[in-house]
Length: 177
Length: 186
Image (cartoon, rainbow over all chains, first blue to last red; front, side):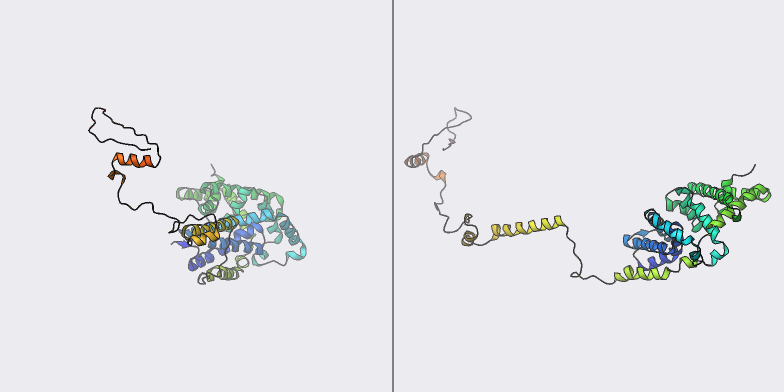
């Protein structure tokens, strides 16, 4: 089914099927819900304005993921200093409890911080692959399409990222395991 | 011999295709070391997956954002922006070009189609080249051409007017004198 980005029903279809996924991609790069939402909105605006045609919903979604990812990475690059401040404020004891929800109660806040730190310490090419792998429902093929790399390359990077994370999380603190 | 750990990672993601998948499964069924590796990788993967806000939290702004986008783009499609309310943006070179074009058309219009001679005289005094009854004089209205006169008559006429005439005769074959004489008058 062909998707036209300016067609109202097509737009709605793509929007509904990809919003949450894009939010996950965006959030795990900027680590801020509001900014993540802004960036996803921006991605959809571009999607509409560019007036493009895609062969399928999936293809449209790949495009959107790619754009969202790039927007988020650019945002991080530009606002590195501000984001560091935000992180510091977040780590202050009073603030930490305010943004808790279901899944965060299952897993301790501290552990989340440790995992995040481990992921962020990975080299860039592994970082984005493991984020797409674990936070979206994409398979190797889809990730390859989004990033413009081969399926086997994705496979290798996912594995390497996992090994590194295993190492980082294992040695760093005993409570993870 | 144990299987490659990368295969285990792919197996965990459910991305192994058939011959390898069953082979890996078979190996995992008895190899404790590989099972431990699988467990480790799975733990890392789950840990990463879990350290994310839930989908409800992330998608709470979904409808809001859509409403915004709808208002901004999708709704606007039916509203046609009228010609007069549209914003025109003109760059500087365009402005210069169009100004020059206006001048050329204005002047050109006068030169080509403008007005009779008296008007031209008023606007551009030194530019009165228009042909009219007052500045064109008919020299002759006889219908005869030059060849209705004999050479002698022409010579006589030119002589009386004070012209110095030089006649030369050119022929390709000098012996045939019966051919008509080409003449050139100067």
